[in-house]
View 1 (tube, rainbow, N blue to C red):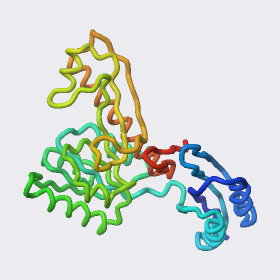
View 2 (cartoon, one colour):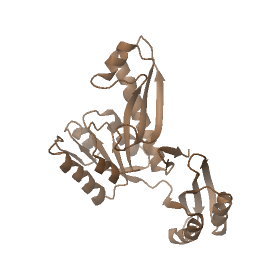
View 3 (cartoon, rainbow, N blue to C red):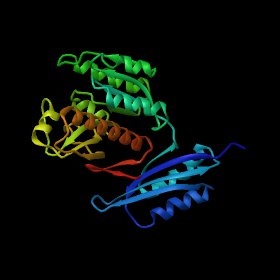
View 4 (cartoon, rainbow, N blue to C red):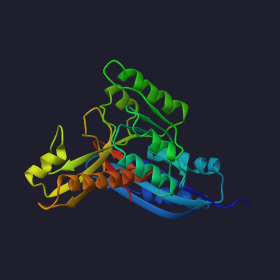
Amino acid sequence: MPPPSHWVLTLACPDRPGIVHAVTGAIASSQGNITELQQFSSTDTGRFFMRVQVQSGFERASFEESVRPLAAYLNATWHLDEVGRPRRTLILASKAAHCLNDLLFRQRSGQIPIEITGVLANHPDLGELAGFYGVPFAHRVVVGQTKAAFEQEVMDAVARDDVELVVLARYMQILSPELCAALAGRAINIHHSFLPGFKGANPYRQAHARGVKLIGATAHFVTADLDEGPIIEQNVTRVDHTRSVPELQSIGQDQESRTLAEAVRLWAEHRVFLDDHRTVVLH
């Protein structure tokens, strides 16, 4: 007899009474054992979100057969996956190494369930780093007249390598609205979050000059509205006047790395749902 399989079922549907009873009942009737369950009802959109892990001795096809009529009854969108399956991930990068290095290390050490299929960059600087981890690396000059070709190469890689997630690990280019639409809900970006905000060159020097007391980072879905996509994860650290510009930058890079890695982990574990213009994250 094959060992029990461990599945994660995610479900989103219009909110109504009896959803939890219906889902858990269907799982119980198929001899599934619930090992983890989270749910949320959005009063803003009238949507219900659920993530449930199920241990079962049945094959995937038979479990899907149990879920399919239930999902139709609830008018639900749903997804079934094996718990812990590495999600195939493409990384876009530029010159900054901290976020890419952190993701590569966490993947190798098993801290986040992703499989990095490759790194595409608009500069050659990080090729040696990717090579150290045995990850394919390619770089292209991305300027006005070559941007469309680079973005087509991204989409070709997504299709060719069955990529499920694209991560912008400090990729310092704005994606076109067309690419944003093609990757909607499966592309994550990271940016620093100063209070107040500083744009343009040398943001850490600007922050130092203004005596910033908080340095943070925000990971969010990529949309055509620059740095305004639905937020997945945020972190912040208090600083004071004793910090130099290099120290502020080091603190900021650490926040960016940790925040991006956590957002990727949450997405890879099927814990992130889109609820209109925001996210629901079921920890």
